[in-house]
Length: 339
Image (tube, rainbow, N blue to C red):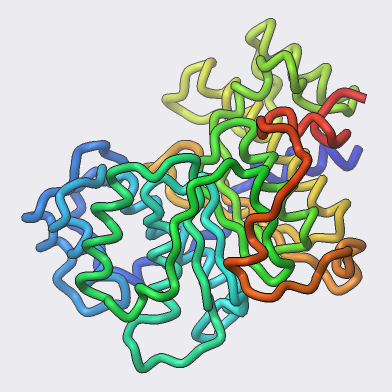
């Protein structure tokens, strides 16, 4: 079936980006996936003049961020920029929404790639929204450090404290999210397809979606049965290659994640999206699959209702009758619930 093919496709090695053209690689002995905090002295790793070296130095001197999260944002941000800019100097979307953003470093990376200095004049990212339920202390620290160095970006960035179901993006927005936990990844997908936006999503915590009683995993019988076998019997079905040094539990987790992400990719294709599956290095994070989607010209959602917006600040947050919980919001849609 098409789902079997889709599952196989997300198991394959995704094309790799030469992202190190954007920043100086740290010494080989540095563990990129370490959760140790970056220290001011680590700024010496990035002593070049590549586009993101200065950002790396600023983050190190701010003395607050785990190392893994810097390299995660760099790898994801440069892949998104390369995929959507298509050889030009900027991403052709006026609005960027970083969903479930936490400190929002991914949004800053993408913004700086388009606006490295005040003289740059592009049509990219007139407004950047960093969205999370609460603004953490790390977001204040990062914002202060970035604006002390690049003050010309101040008018373009806004942090919005809100649940996702309160957000209604314009159709010419790009939605990005790194490690939106479990079902929140599906909420981001639904936000994108409802409004025909661009999408770049790195899901995580796939297992939490399986065991949540209120939203079973998938509605297709064959894959649903397969997932029950994997999760209850502990067997490895062999859809992906066996990886040396991995435990059976790790293979089961990879198998489950691949099936879920294949369903997500197929949902996007069924909604008229062109979908690419990219990846960042596993040494940074094992949850390294990046789903990138863009509406095609014949998308059935390209001419939806309420497409006229006055200003982004006035239209992004709109009153709604949706339930208060994003999980309840998701239950309204058959793609992500049992038939």
